[in-house]
Length: 321
Image (cartoon, rainbow, N blue to C red; front, side):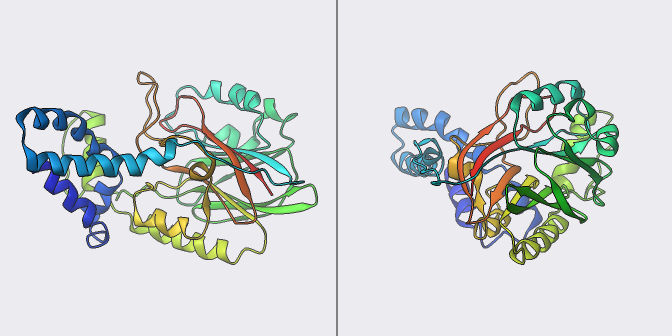
């Protein structure tokens, strides 16, 4: 039943993508392969031939789907190109270790830092202890969020424009201006659960509300508006931040048909950035944070950062143009 149900789920991705419950389930697709590892040896021992065929088919599909991300990559640097290092990080409004973020940023020494869900002092005043390293700093509050966002840059920033879900600036790198978008899309959860639950346990309640209140309508509208903005952009484009979008959703495919996913282009591994926990120091099993770039830019390196008190991991990349 597991094998047939999962194969049916994978085959129905396009047919059922319009249903909220199916859209929720697609976010966690990698987890559904885990039972194969446990069931296959047992079924081989029991000589359940039909079940073994189904499980082996799922195993082969998983190896193709995920194994390719661990293969060595051959990336040719751009001759005489300009190199830019960039980091994006959702700090989380519940981060109790914000004091470790600024020292890590200083150690990381990326050319441009994009932060989401920043504390009010940083949003309003910038990060004073990093002013020498990043003389150009911009903070703002997105209309779809009570939390702030900050851009730190070693290069001049100009032509700023704000939207409900992103903030655009032009970063002047040498003689080349680049359109830079710091993105924090709406969490795909309704304000009220479809079926409320009355418990005092915050974790159980929040997981329940996320499951029974899942609704990606507004996030998809923000994505479509951002796509239109990016497609009309006359400059080379870098779009980075928290998209609240798994790479197993149709929305990801829509983006990937227009821009290049830096981590898939130059990173190694699955690349999960959420959720991560202090007591379980490992990458997340869902990709929510991305660095995208237009065709005139090439990614030569991408990697995840360490745990910094947030339920997201930082994502860094080296780009050439």
